[in-house]
Length: 166
Image 1: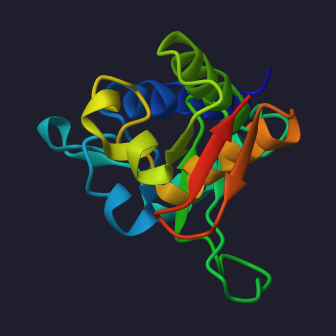
Image 2: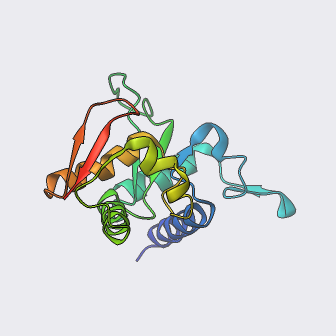
């Protein structure tokens, strides 16, 4: 393993651990460089934005185990760094979150029930769950994984949308 590959792997592990510990699901490049994750004021060292992008590109790649994904901006992607302003960090992949969500629904006896996206993301019943605070777009990716497996159906598109679990 080359030195760069080892450094990228270590950064990936550090980013995933930091995000899991702090319940960070989305990393914005506009604030990342000044965050404690990439900036150590005690020793006056920080990772520059180009290096942060390089680490995230690694995490997105197969070599980096697809532990991140650039958040689509809705704009046509150009060559270069266009569209690379924030990334979802997969300390758990959407498919893994789908399993966790489905397990919670099952353990709380709510299979066959219809719950709203709001109830699943923000109600008092889920406040102790690790997915609290997850970006709605990412949460819907998790629900999409359940839909593909035939374990859920989503009705509607707004925050009041319902989800029926099987």
